[in-house]
Length: 115
Length: 113
Image (cartoon, rainbow over all chains, first blue to last red):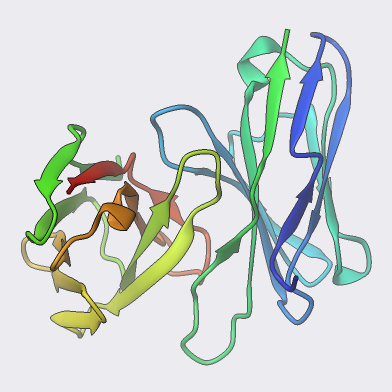
């Protein structure tokens, strides 16, 4: 399968715990994005990488959130000291920004439930 | 502030008819607009991209229009099928930075046989 993969698919954690999600993008894609989606809403942009460089972070991304993309391959999103408001679907997407091609390919998401 | 609005009510349509979805935006001047499909519990799937200098774009049974004066895009599914039932999202890049997408809340389409 050459699509975007995310692990785990589901995560239940207690408030105050740290969680880490992983995203493996399509191998030749140079951009990787993280979004968060709550029920009934569209995805909200969190951050994105061009290769290994993190180019932009949303104001939604508090200091408890950190993302990395070492070596420009897979990416991790860590949430420290989780809060109930962090419960959401976390989506990863990748794209190959070349010429005029801007479509993004999304993974299946990681559903986080904070109890 | 920048805003993207899509019909919040589900669109119920009979198989074979054309479904038309609306995406209105304010305080943007996007270079392009994208449409995605999302099934429950899954990530969005890219469908179509239309640029500001294109009035209309088609892909199989799908058609998208883009009116930068009205600040509106229309998304049409012709000859709809039950398999087209899903939520459809429109997305804009507010900074034309090639990827930082802002999405509407989506419109659910239900196609009944």
